[in-house]
Structures are given as structure tokens and as C-alpha cells.
Length: 318
Image (cartoon, rainbow, N blue to C red; front, side, top):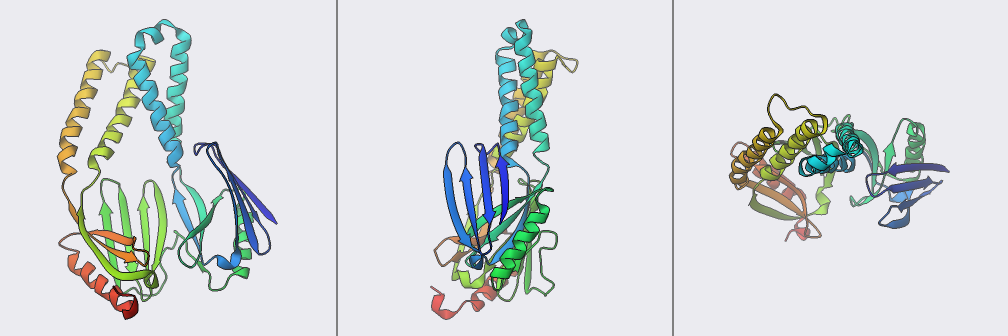
């Protein structure tokens, strides 16, 4: 039996204990808000894939801690400056928030296990300490499961030639998605500053229906988050450490408020610019795959959809 334990303090103090026996695994999850235990057999595992990700929970915690310290330093600056212990606490909180936010971009690896229908079974957080244990676990699973598939972000696509390929850039999210359409499946690789992961969709999971529509973007929300982060960092320096950049704190605050207002006025109308979207439904009526299309990619996407529909049997078309 191989036991792997992982701790996620910024996800409600979550502790995950996984026990891998000869033919099945037992998983126990416990946090401040929920507890869950379940098991699955290795013969149910159909796909093993990797995900590389930044620690979003830590990132959010660091962001809000920075925002909290900046807000209290500005709102209660007279009280805080009058008591050195309060100022020291604020400085410590600010440094901790900044440290947590910056270090959250360091990416971690995890192994995802899924069944033949693409349903998620569990994931295993990979570290230097458990690397050998995970290798043994994967060998155990492969020895007990037929036709298992192993995917890695280091080499996301197979050597065989694809029928079509579609590349999409999402500038607001700093994300690039490359999707290749093979004889029996869709394999996509998505990479951003926050994560790298694969998605695989079998044509047999689709029902033949096509979703067509238009969608805007969340440019306003993203720009406000970035502006809020920058403002929190700079206000912390100004009111927490007395770095005034050659002008008074009130002038700095006024400039930052003006900057936020300007970003809102610029980003708000851009969020209403809609882009054409095309998607494919699965047998449950949910959209299994979708992508933005533009004038240059529209013909290629339409040919890709026709190719996929030709792979779906007439009986499951609606």
C-alpha cells in the first residue's frame, strides 16, 4: 500500500489522504467546510494526464490581504501611525500578502485520473518527496487497467497527423489554446501564466448538435483586478512604509482613484464587443467544446465541425 498525503491551507485547510492498494484506491478529504471519503478501482481509470498550475487559492488570499492592508492603512492612517504596534502589524500583513501573491505564480504539478467517459476520479499533487511513490502508483494503475492512456503537458500531442488544427489567443486572460482534431478525438492544450493542461474529447461523447452564438469578454473585471493589485501594492508602500515618491500621500491617492476611473471608462465599453462562438454538445446536452472564431479562422472551423459530424453516427445525431 502506498499512502500520499497533501495539504492545501488556502482551500479551507484541506487535507487529502490517498491510499493506493493493489487494485483500488481510497481517498479521504477533510477541510473546515466539508468531509468526504470515496474509493475507485484501477480498472475504471482510462486516462492519466498532467496539469501544471499556479496556486490560485494562495493568489486570491494574497490579493485580498494586500487589499485589506491598503484599505486599513488609508482609512485608519491616523490611528495606525499613532500606535507603532498597529503599524508593525500592518507592515507584517502587507509583506506576507505580497510574498504569498508573488510566490503563488510558482507552478505545481498534479496527476489527474479520469474514467472512460472523461469523468474526474481524483488528482495527486506531485512533489519532490512523493515523485517515486507516484511513479509506483501509475505503474499499479496501468497493470490493472486495460487500454489506459497517458498524457503529459511536456508532449501534449501524439506523433500522428491531425486532420485539423485550431489556435486561439485570449488576450485578456493571457491564454493560448491549441486544439487538434484527430480521427476519433479532440485533443487540446491550453497554456497561460496560471496553468497548463490538456483536454481530450472523444467524438463518441458528442451528439452532433452545434452551438452558435456570440459572447463578450470580462476585460473590465480583469483590468479592475490588475488596477486594484497595483494600487494596493503602491498604497502599502506609501502609507505603510512612508515611501511618497516625491509627492504627498493625498496626491498619490487622488492619482490612483483617477487611474481606476480611467481604466473603468476604457474597459467597460470594450466588454460589450462580442465575438462569434461555436461549440459542440455532448450526449447530456452540455457544451463539451467551444471556441471563438473570427473571419480568418471561420472557414477552417466550419470544415472542422463538418468533419466531426461526419464521424458521429446517424443514430446519435439530433
